[in-house]
Image (tube, rainbow, N blue to C red; front, top):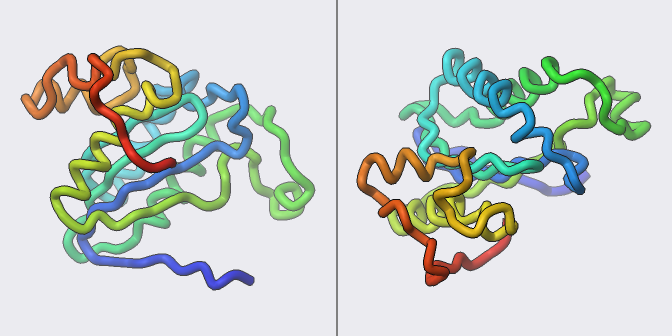
Length: 176
């Protein structure tokens, strides 16, 4: 057993990366974007949180959530979101012997990446990273061309100009 630990901070904002189990040539998330949005609404209605920023890629997603002030339970939210989505997808994915033994679907990676956002600069960098991700992965050449992103909401609010990142002068450090 590993010494893996998660930090829990009430009312915190978190950056998450969540991946499909089979990432190569997998477009499940964008092919089922309406179902994925329904999964988010389902969870938010039961366990509220603010979805501050998001980019849904074909095989993974990045997002920022802010939990209610006294709440630390992002793990339950992810479990419910993944299970809602999985229950509504026809079984066709590969399942390893360990997943079969545990009666698990093979859609999602079991773990996810969580980073506690510590200040406004950290928040801003992660919002930029989220919105730049479709360009980073070569899915579009302009951030505004990716339809599965909160970027458009940020433009409507005047936070980003519509051509943000378009001229290639924006680069994000780090990986997923």
